Length: 176
Image 1 (tube, rainbow, N blue to C red):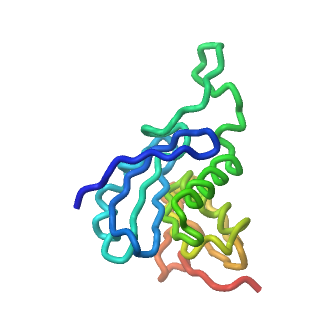
Image 2 (cartoon, one colour):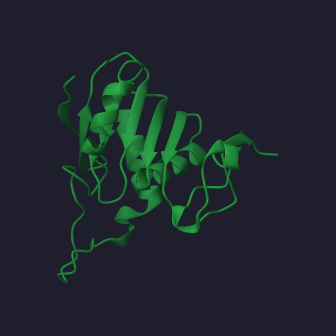
């Protein structure tokens, strides 16, 4: 399986993505974590290609996508601090999906990508078919609710907690 390097103009931002093919299957958008890129998922895309049209996006400011204008102070920070805020990045992800012609799509998000996926699932649930989040947080909330679904006990190796179902982690149920 080979992927094709593609670009899309979304809200004036040039975004790079890897299209792993299989047009016509349900779309699966892969969103990388902070300081990562679309190639993060190269090994996984092959496995998911049987059931999905797999696309890995370089989110704004990552990989080969356009980076925000930098501040003139030599710090390397973006001139507009809002450039990396969740609503901005999530809006770009949604606009990208719309440009791809996807009325509904699934997301596999790692860290930052998972955060953006959760935001979309909470704000536009009618557009998100499935959401898989891969996160290794350094803190461990005992309960989080997103769009009516509750996840209990996130993993945190730093505190010796497990995310295995046998120890109470990674269980999902409707809130209420």
